[in-house]
Length: 550
Image 1: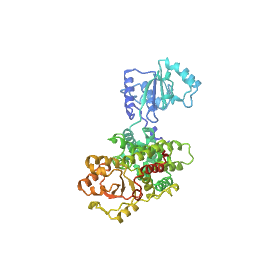
Image 2: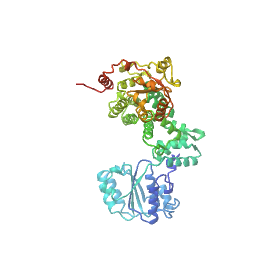
Image 3: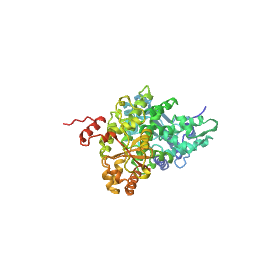
Image 4: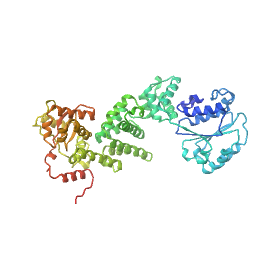
């Protein structure tokens, strides 16, 4: 009968256990010195080696010829424990034997001396499942056990175990196994199974396993079978086996969310659904990618926290520059709520569609995170002095993507570029026809870092900073289109020093060289400059904020 890899390659000595050196070293030193405790408690997440170490410890304390604290695995006791012929070592599943009577029977067995081994070892797996009465029955035995008995308790939920039990055991906390250690073990197993695995595929399996080596070996087993006669496991095989969406699909979805392109979001999701990808898995993937972007935005050297290939980190750095932290946190919260709800849902696809629509359009979401995201947009507009255009910015993005919601049909905003009769530097000058064509054909995206650009101009070009008060800027292709209400801007920008200062400030914030162009806003030009209070009220109301003036 075929034996699955995680059983076939279960470690037989402490030296073989991956990623738990802090535990295996301590246990080996105890065995070498002969200071064997009467009760051990192994706790940690699934697949980290708790039961494996319990079985190795059971063999080690009874081994006739131990080697440096490890069992020899060749003596009669070791072989008998492995094949189950020695009854002095018992493994009990507390999930199905959790009653008082079960523990009383176990307690009665402890009175008998071992028949063949040195110690009677009782391994109680999932010990947190015992009832309160069963814990009380076990307590007295743990407090004053016979000299020939060793208890090994294993659990994934140590908080459910009474303090009276905890205080009578030596506790060992198993860590999640590092991706590098899992990948190394996968390469070792694959080599002995006469198969081949790429380093990228091993790291991908390790990240999917999330610190559980047993899960990683189970997935590797499936991947080797799926690879067929070639027996070569690469990223494509792992992705198909685990039901993962391609990286290109993930990047496309992230871009669609940033551009508020609902139609592209739904079409991408339709492709994923038709490819029979699991929606819960896809949601987890998106959360992982946005978490990586959050770390990139907040940590100077994120490579230490992100176990990802260098090229993938570079791509995520580019994507993260298009989001601010509030946006990333709101999107992660939307996805996390959806992932939690999917376990109770009958249609995961619909859940995912609703979540991504809210992630792209925070005005559809009533959560505190969505409100914080919308307020951050308002704060950015206030800093740049562009209060009157805050509502229009959202409309520009929605209109560009041609995916407006029905409620937006009557909210169109007419925007075009300013008259460019005034001289603009030669390399930045563009004709009126080209300006209008760019604004109609290219996607116009607000330059979120414009307040930071203006702040830098305070030290590099103070006069230019002064005339840019109340201005805003948009990205259109390879140009930054500047909407400046003060006409003096056109006179200052012809100076080489001011032009270079503005270009450098934009480059320092975006990392990209842009040409400079004008942006005309007819709504602003026709607005009465004296009615600033009404402008502010209209802008706030358009963003869903109720404002009343006395």
